[in-house]
Image (cartoon, rainbow, N blue to C red; front, side):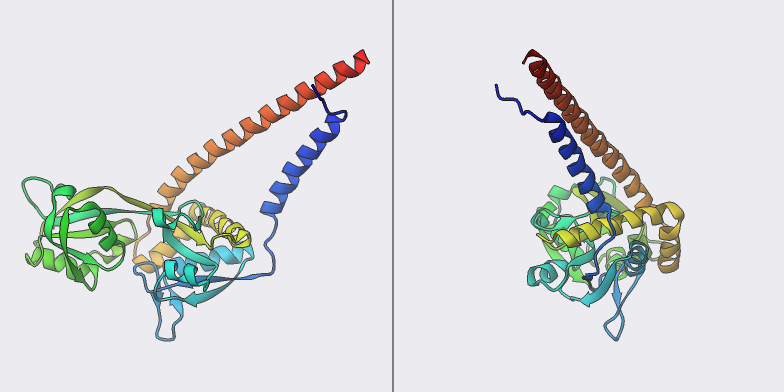
Length: 298
């Protein structure tokens, strides 16, 4: 068996490498200005007549960037994040749903979630998503994907916005609609007086969203994580709720709930990392003991 003659040097080098790696990851970002995309995507993102961004997620990311000392420039890409990243137009996108076809992108830990439901007028038996066919109302975006993915043979009817879709369901224009439900989406919901609606969750239609970074861009990924860390702080100090109150008229605990789950997952990962470190240290001690024993014999 070959045993290194200098295991203490190996141990020191390993610890130094781990320490420098952690320090480098948490160091202040570079002077690069990162291009972050936006589009018209209510209720979180809007575009003014001059093509400038505004909305809750814009305020959130701008405040997070200020705290993290990250330089951002906003880039309008009306087609959305997939087209923006594919064309190389942006380095970051403020909020993107994690979908299987987006595995090539880098995602931070989530800070938002949305669950898609079937909306209908009150009926004796709840709807079964896999059995829904015929006319189904949607708005453009992920509702189309959820309907096509989870419903049997939907005949999709597109509405301009959520209020128009709800009004059509209440007026028997379409029997069923597919809509997202979250703290922020509640700001779009307007139900006509006297209309009693029923919500049926679509199995497997819960999506989590985080900041996305361009693939194979370590700098953008690092900055995305820095921004996400600051959002976590903003959840704790009330800034997130203040921004929600400003834009939606009421505070939401959506991010707090996601942050709780994220923190639990983070703690589990940290325990796993520390367990690996302890095992590595024990292995190094064993190697050193063998080396000392061999040296004493010689």
